[in-house]
Length: 308
Image 1 (tube, rainbow, N blue to C red):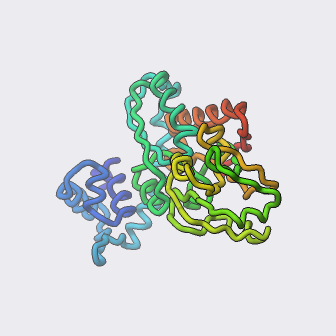
Image 2: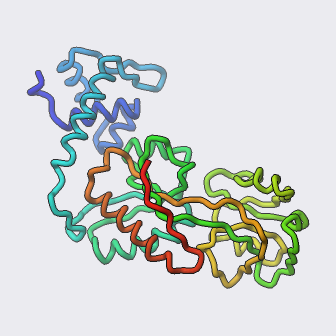
Image 3: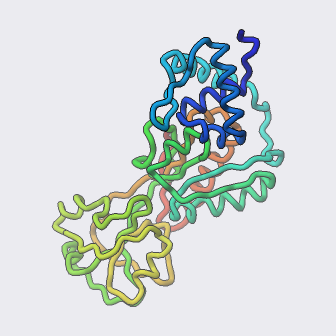
């Protein structure tokens, strides 16, 4: 019966098991739901098993289907490197890549990546999406995302990644604001704005760090974009801590404080199934090179390239 099994059916079986939904599997494969149902009927005949049972709105794999998927996944992953050309030529690529990143990372890295892609790989189309951490795992699993530029804390555990650079925070206010700080605890006398691209809140990720130093910030606003910080601070004496790579900025002034919150690493992550993809490796290499080139700018420090 195995002579009736083809690669497309194997991929379909994996996708239905991952999504547990015929409609979503059909959308991912760009086929009709009827076509998926027909192929599942053929697979049931080949493997003499129901393969999936309906549970509410989900198609739950049977124990035999789970065993089959594990074996099929291993086979496909072992074959994937052999399908890639020995020499990778970015100029010959005709493909679309989707990258997810917060606005800060888009400004720091992806604008330059787009410029390079247009010059070196004109047939490559780039889709950039805002970072949505709650759906990252599902989007990567279903192939809706190719790369994610983020901090490690936002990534699902199973995603491998490489560190691009390490960042530090700087205290800022609107240009011309009358801000006088003589001791770190003077921050208690000012209102504060925080940036929360992933989840809106009025707490901030460094709340405990500030409290340990005697500062309980009066956070009066949370905004989703670093690029709009200057606009929000304009005309006020509100303070904000922003990544150093956003500076210098004509509408922001640096406020000297003797302590700053812990910084963070910016990483690029990919799905394990694409680890042998020459295109993904090329794109990751371009991002690493962009980060290295920017280390010469004020405030830039490159983190060591590591994997997880």
